[in-house]
Image 1 (cartoon, one colour):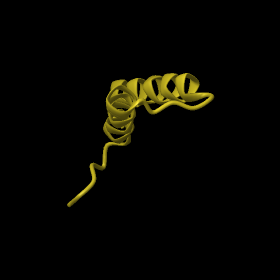
Image 2: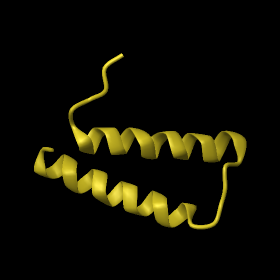
Image 3: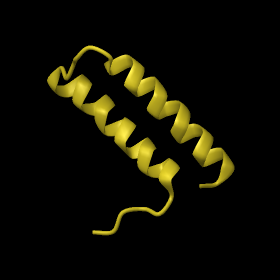
Amino acid sequence: MRLTKNLGMLLLGIWLLIQGLEALVGLSFRGLGTIEAILALVAGILIMVGR
């Protein structure tokens, strides 16, 4: 299996996995919302600039 070279897409994938785990198994810990927000912002910026 080959990971994507696009860092923005990789971060988006990680964010989506966290969202799915949070919904399915009730994943929750202090600071999770902040981590999700930072991942979403960084992924969005990197995708927009094409990295």
